[in-house]
Amino acid sequence: KHLLLATLLILSALNTSAARLSGSYGGRQCPKFYIGLYHNGRFECIDSVTLDSAGRFSISLPDNRQGILRIACRNDKNASDALNKADNTSSLQFIYDGQDIVYETSWRWHNSEDYLRVLEGGETTKLVGLQVQKQQQLYEHLSALESVLDKTDRSSAFFTTVDAEYTETIRKYNQELQNMQTAAVPGSMFATVLSCLQEPGAPSGLQSEQRVDWLRNHLFDGIELNNPLVYHSPFFVNRLRQYLYLWQPKGVVSESEIKASQAEGIRLLKEKVQSSSAEIISSLEQCLSMTRD
Image (spheres, helix red, strand yellow):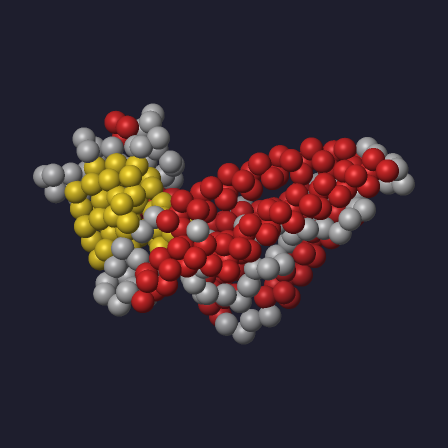
């Protein structure tokens, strides 16, 4: 399966003609569709289209950009609002690595599994969607295990058993991601998204406060912070939100104390970036600003 995926991605990367985005909407009435790419915490409009008499559209996509592509159907006159306020009922998203994307859909099918049929260019998007579901299941499982660990004597055999399950659960999740990354084209948006979905595995034997301290220092392990594509991924912004939450003091504290603690976390994060690129530094700042929305 991974060999097939790698072959599909390599063929896509070798395609030198301009990629196209083509959509077919059965029975969909919408005055305008906005197409945007995610960049520095927001979707930026790259085009807008109206459907032809057959309910279709087809446009060229930029061959010098990669990212998360969104097609939004909303009545907003402002393209930015249309793209950034859209939800799953009014938009579609794809991982874009320079490949053609062809799909057909109808919101009349929305309650069935086949309301969207991706005919071309959606393989990596589907894989990431499945992985996001697994990540949510992972968090639920880890949360339950953490609750048990924090109430258990660390010298007991039961603690050792639960702690081993905690570590092994993360290891298996990350191993599946690493297998997918090995099959992905190096430097692709797909590979970048996968890196943002990795879960740092804390050492065995830690309880709640120790685990928080460890995660503060290791939450971005495996993510290339000097890679511009990282900042084109909404999964990275989610990781930033998680990081700032770790820097929020426990208990009843003032807003100024929260801001001071998170400012220290941001300072340490910027030290990890270690880039002289104005683009990277600006991208990080903009992504951080999105965590306050």
